[in-house]
Image (cartoon, rainbow, N blue to C red; front, top):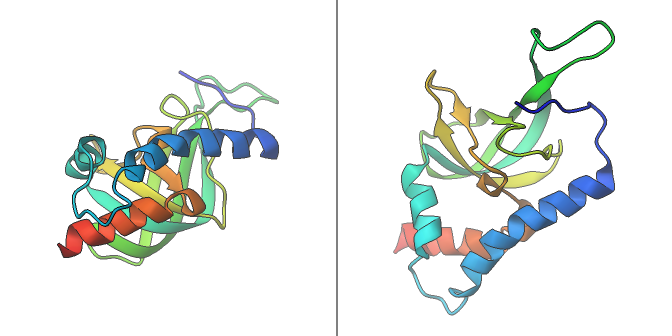
Length: 155
């Protein structure tokens, strides 16, 4: 179980976001030739996801572990993000999306106001959850992957 301090160093977050998105960039690089197929890693992510969408984060809320928290110290398990679905490739059409990302799965915090391509799965209670840092690709780093998704779903 991870415990995370509330303050997040912006420079470290940027570095973490960049490093988490390189895998998606590497996966998508081979298909810049206009091919309509995706590599197996991206296909697996799509196949196991309940929701594949481009989302703008509008709210970030802490998931607190009351059992580990003490007076003057809050134990954070992760974050619940709310946002506006700007485009949905897989999943129920909706305007508002809420999903969870625990610090056990990813030690970085997504930024409010930023755009992300997310691959979300349902947890045992039916809530949308991201299973890793790679399940949220920052908008600027997702351009090639967005094009691949468009070609894949239109093809």
